[in-house]
Length: 478
Image 1 (tube, helix red, strand yellow):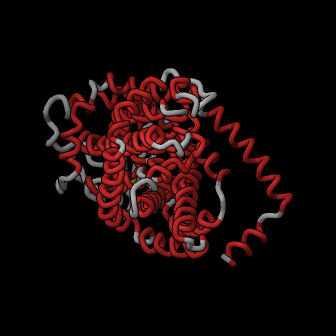
Image 2 (cartoon, rainbow, N blue to C red):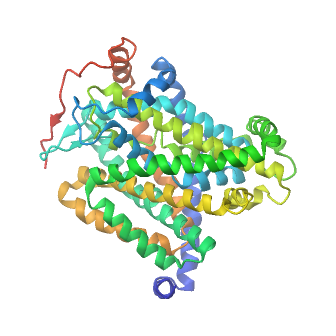
Image 3 (cartoon, one colour):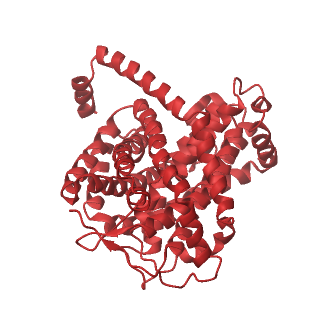
């Protein structure tokens, strides 16, 4: 604790705190503007457009799940299809599934859960398209590594290098917010409030664990995430399932309330007041994106490293991540929160990001521990996954020589995030999410014809096992 006090006093004076509050208010205003109706229409509209443009690829969900656990040794790539999916899930299954959903319910009402869920359902098509373009336009580095993502789709598919550079910049900045300090702060806060572990101790330990994994590169990250993701997801889902079983009498009323209040927030009753449909949609969709990252453009960066014989196979595998993240885990979190509010008079919407913690505390003896383990593993895996995203963005901007510098700074940011309250970082993360989404959605919409052709060629023609005609090109620049 002494380290934290010394560091805090050194960095922040009262005058500086006032200035930080003013900056935070400005950033929050910008975030609210970015996540207004234009973004909601663009994001959800892209999800719906791609769903029907591609012939509803959600129909192939079970095929996608089966492919995700198969190793495609005949394809080019650095890690297995499951390794790429596990790394993407590690980055997406984080505090957005726990704190993010609770925040959406607190600020947008129970109806935000439906908007979050719908974002996931239609977002499967967007995640599919992102994964396809990542493989289609990926390149091979001089050392044999596969590099891809929206920046390469923008540059090679559209010839818009300037927009590719902007996307990479936004991704690099976002990796320190959504992927790093927000997650580190969630871990340190949870462990301190539950077990009274000093945040400085948590920060040092978390930084050391992060360094042990990320310094080994994508194969090390994929290996750890492949072991961690199934455990943490199953552990959390079982906890949610137990609460829903205890609250079974309130399960159907919760579903009905979520559906009705999505379009009439006043239906939430006296415990929730002042919401509008735009608030329910705004918070549900934004937290849905924060959780599953469909349309954000982050997941295809690691999808490009997968061993796969054609773009559609990995596209299907990538799309299954949105199903697990939002359609299953976020939906269960939302039901747990709403059913617990209906079942217990001492829980209200005003509890904000504490809603999930209060709900889990109703599990005798082990509820708090279950949530702590879930949140810590979710958040730590996100730190690992986003480090890879940031690395690839930095490499695109300045070359491989900057990767180690980035890793060192990233590890240091984990410590900083563990020590401070980061409302400002949350708001900056919201801004970076939106700024990443714009160029990525441009690529998805303008290259949707390419996605449709590849989908028709391999998916709807029954040629999923066929190898692609062309191998990834070799990267010319350093």
